[in-house]
Length: 326
Image (tube, rainbow, N blue to C red):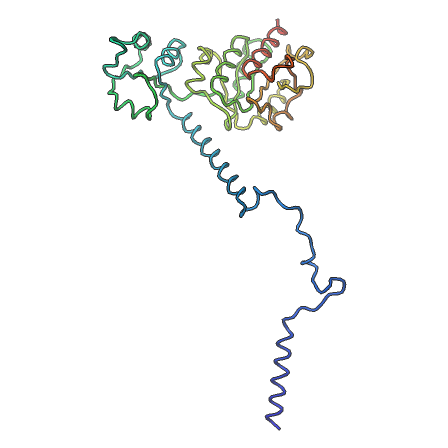
């Protein structure tokens, strides 16, 4: 009898143990709990799903952009070797800052020294720049295998101003401030051309963003045709905040875009303190920068023309500002 009682007790325990882990049905759920019925929301895009190929592609693209940005910052923070006979000669004629001129030993062109190299050597000597002769193999290594034509000019990193420095320059000029802010311009030739126009039409300085934009490279120096030596270029950590600061100090921020609020011919505020904001090639003004513009103006063009080059558009707007100030 004791054994029968013990067996019965074991059976009861087994029954309780087997049933203890089961979930009981809840009224109105069809036997399922509420969490299993709750929706998961909208399906995220493929680029946001870690196991989707589009996600890996997006991550790789972002990494490449970051690497390019870091490489660009490193190159702008270190001396640049400007290569080629025409670029070097043009740079020396434009009086861009330089620390040394490199010439490959015994470099000749069709029986004699190239006239461009001879003039470059003379211009460097007139400025007191060191003339360094190097072997071709060594210069190939210095130029990372790029075409150098036997000559190179070492250009130091550009000494950027602070955006507030441009306002001080404007106040000391006795004229209403006229600044140019560039939103993501990436071509150094466009930057140099805009600086040249800004200097020609009496602007007080140019502001470029620290990220996702080109800085003062040797190519930008050369394209400015010496104007970069007369006009300060400032670098802004955050362009939107810089524009907000200019607004607080009494400047009107005037954006330039193909879909502007009004034609540039109808805008009458260029005689006032102005920061002219020019967008990137193709992309135009970014959303945040555009939100910090008091007004956005456009340049009327023929319907058959898709758009103007950014440096050409900036030059037209600067001419309009200069005309209004006379």
